[in-house]
Amino acid sequence: MRPCYRALQSNCSRMAKESQNNYKISCSEFFSVNLFVYISTVIKNKNNMQEIINTTGIHTVDTLSNYTEGKFRMIVKTRLGMTCCDARDFDNPRIMANPESAITGYKKGVLQTVQFQPAGSDHWSTVFSRTGKKVKLIDKAILASLTVGTINGLYYNTNLYGQFQYKAVNASSWASKAYTLNQPESQLEAA
Image (cartoon, rainbow, N blue to C red; front, side, top):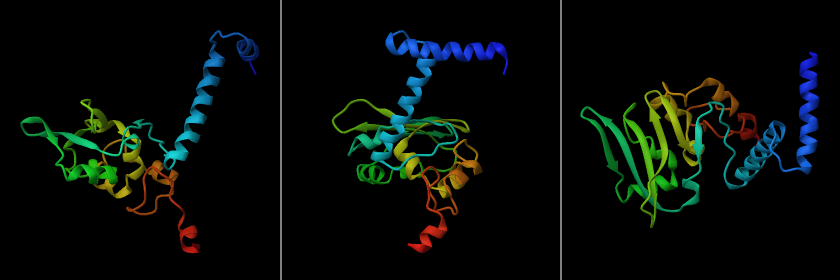
């Protein structure tokens, strides 16, 4: 171990002990607080829905799980430019029940953004956004219900696709969930 690294490590541990008594923010306190927040967030979200395993690093929001009804609109790319399409009244309950269907109703590469407006609100929140081949933002409810078949059929050239991601969740077929843990086939046969 280099002497400068050892000195930095002992200095950070000393600062962490001092920062517990004082309310000054130091580097080590900042990282330990963020680690605690991350761990408590994972435990908190595990109670609400299945734990999401996201090895791709796509940013997520948690909007749809907080509401029971609302309206959806999609921004799609056409030959004339971008067009806004409101979901029909009978589509909104179907999308709330199966969030994956919010991003599967269009041809490959056409859907750019999905927005959600909670009932009784005038504000639209973005629950899915992509630019080119990169998915920038996706809601946790959509990510939890997303299957391997949907990604392989519509989003195989985006950052949603990845064999490492499929291996991390034990995906074995196109019907497997892509971002929530699947039971291994041996456990399914035993049950």
